[in-house]
Image (cartoon, rainbow over all chains, first blue to last red; front, side, top):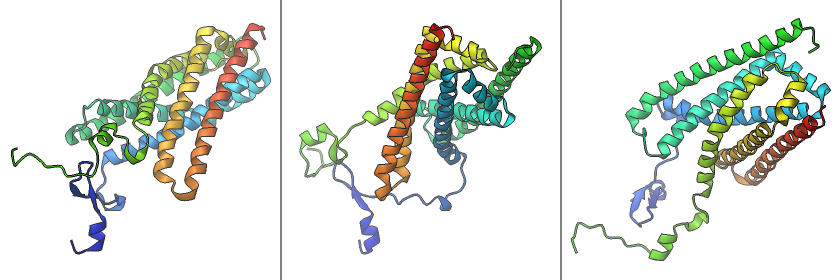
Length: 157
Length: 137
């Protein structure tokens, strides 16, 4: 081996045999694949899900603090912009759950071949879109119904 | 001995190999923590989504009454603890992957403290709800 840069990329396996270590992945040289978007999305949705969970804790804290704080929290959750955030949180949790289930399946040793991965990717996207849409629509409908029922009964908030 | 059998020449004792931890000094505990908490979150978050159908658009009295029930309080606390534990373990991996150098340790501590505090806040909110529900307010 003459090239010093090449020599630096020689590593050894735990049994001592020499191998050429893989180079760091330079993302820009790769052709676009759905699997790479889905992979990073699992991390991003994990972060969003955490942020949403923090908001959920604040909502719970407002309920614990008293009716006044809870009224403020309801202004946020009843607001279209607030509901958009809630739907985004829901979709992130749904995707992270679907991605997480895929990870558990891979860990168990299944569906990890190239063809299987490429087949399952679009399914994961479809399931996420379907489940998120149905849940979001149903939850918003239920919340809306309850609100308007209470308004008809003449109760405040 | 057959010549085709691979020959291992390595400066490492078989005991060291069997113990297996090497320079990492830790094993697969973190990996398992991530998976087990993830699996636990499946039923817990399903329960939460179902509860949200009962609570969507609810007023304060209804939420307090709901949170005061022992089963709901238990499930809620379990969900909160598991969620922020899983978040802590997961965010730690992200920080390990993308934050290098001097910023690494403070960022990691921040993640640990932040997720722990959010979890504690959630649990105390549940306790307060139970107390509130008991006193009929």
